Image (cartoon, rainbow, N blue to C red):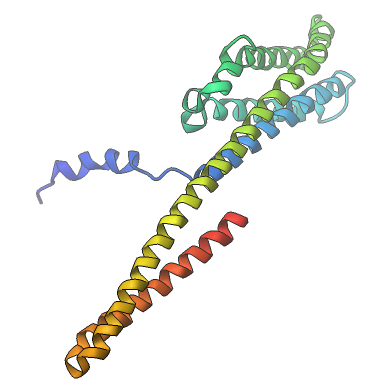
Length: 227
């Protein structure tokens, strides 16, 4: 059996052409990940303290929280969700004077060292734990700031989408208006032409159907905009 290499060669192209999620869905994911990162940062510190006190299961919980925190941060820095893709204020917050990425990465490394030291009862464990606790408050301020930026971007996107939808609705209404005029004219011609005007009557009926569909689209668009 002969194989056609072109079929295999097209596979990566088809994968690369996968549809992107709607903008609203994307920003919802961004806010969710940012909120998860904010929550788990505090969870890491809390359970690290409990682990240092010998609380059973606390060390494992702290490690799980740190893994979740790291995964969320990594997701927010890659692909279509990355600061490079979204640009502007977000790019500045992560890599500009605020150095959010540097601060977050340093916290992850410090937390790993502290948890490893607690696990082995190392001499430096109390010092590292104290540093981790002290780092928690300024880190939370950074994470709150990033979450606020994501929420602001989501609101801007929603406002832009609503404005664009309003323009599209205006275009649809204009098309429906012209279609109604054509339908009316066809009805007039059909009435004057009698039996020979049947074709115009068909056109009129079809145009009436089309305008009804357009009006329905406008109503649906309005409901979506309000929602």
